[in-house]
Length: 481
Image 1 (tube, helix red, strand yellow):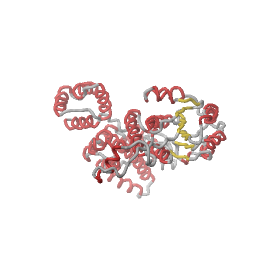
Image 2: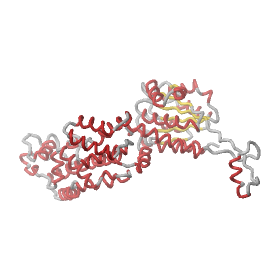
Image 3: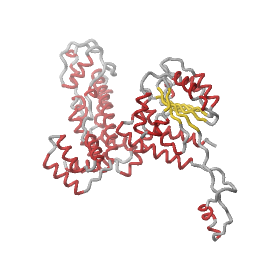
Image 4: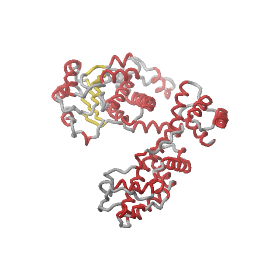
């Protein structure tokens, strides 16, 4: 148990909770006194020893719940479905599954694919020979969880620091649990030729695939728990690549930090200056540096230059339920880019369009996001109404220096898309950029009007991660003359 506690302390340090060696020894003494029979009592006791500030206590609670969470398997992982491969019709499949779980053929009256009852098919009593196969067919979640954790400890999964190692550690854990023997058994059963052997191999294969998914999830959680400070940058790169809709709420703070760093990076890259003028205000620093080779004689005079003008941007975000997660991060990103895009105007809609620029200027980011979602996030999506509202209230502010960014899936609930309004905007502004979180293959499916809208856009991109968003905004800045 001491080794487990040491690993838990490493997790706390990864979460930026400062735990000294003396506090670790105190935690060991505390563990000896309170034991680990009462989970809540243990949690509260360790919290008193290892966390100091309110922020650390909150982080401690999260780390404790994640570290000591052993619910790696669900009951549904061991249930067969009617559409499984090689499954019989009627109740035959469930009877076979019951025989696989209990080791005895069911006495039920269901019919198999051949019309025979389980009593007529004694081969249904066939059990896996591999230890992992028997464990999977038994459906014993506790036993599987213990085996998974022990295999993870055996291969050193807590040493993972690079997310690309996820596949490597998944394979190592699978092998440590007996995956190789299970694979050989599945191959042997498939080559046997008997229908019951094929059915058993199909069940084992499905359980193995589900087990592999669970192991992959387990390794991913271990990465977030144990990756040390040297892997923090890699975790940030991961968050940039993960689909925004898959980012959990507890990671929003980390994502916000990544967004701010991305914005600062773009600031440093795109804060270009105009060509050097031959008159104006003297740049003393650059002049001294340039003329050091001339012993301080000013042969090469440098003048201060002006920053490049930035575009006027209007961001229109669909904050309806289907794309609210994506809109949240676009608004967050544009909020962080205010230093280099000072003329941003932000709008939100589900059906009626509303401006949220002032809300962002006079509220904290968290409050602004919450109020935007509350005020505009209800109702069915209506892009036609949004475009009509934009034409009525904002078209007069659009000119040939305006860039319009629209984030949404273009799903209009089969209403009037009013794409002719978008064409008017296209003709008047400098650029229309549409960022769609759905893959291109979905743009012509169902109620999506993306094909019609794309014809009235200068640029249409898939945008469902921070990497996509950074690339689009980077291109926007790079193309400004």
